[in-house]
Length: 175
Image 1 (cartoon, rainbow, N blue to C red):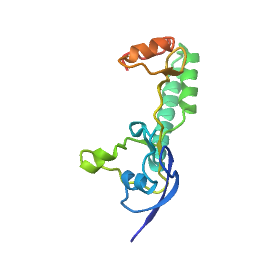
Image 2 (image 1 turned 45 degrees about the vertical axis):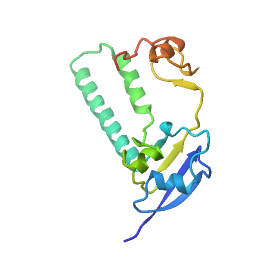
Image 3 (image 1 turned 90 degrees about the vertical axis):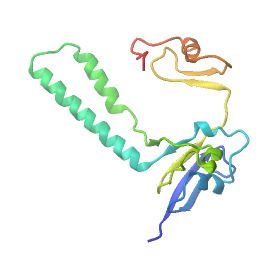
């Protein structure tokens, strides 16, 4: 049976919006339907969000949370209350963490056309976002001050971490 799919594309394309595509159509087809990239598009930063992936990630997150609760219950029955406050804090962060449906994809049309990378087939409800090229770097995570830093050519990651106030106490510096 022949199925149509409804997908959305946002950001730096000529005609962002909702599109109806054929079953088997991919990122390349959607970008072409949307008129191609604008002159300021930054395809390397493209994002594909998929509903099914988000559901699977939510289930995994819930399972992890439940396992954590079971382990905590086992610890509390053994009379151990060491670090209880930090465990509660970790549990709250785990429970409140937003779930992503992000799928790894390539948005470089030249690479897709050449066959160097495989196009991703889109599913019903998928959302693609193509950002604009900006001259700053986003710094998020376990740093003193999250935000943006102006891009400087030939600077490495430690430059940007230093500019954001350095690592926080909870940073996984190797990760």
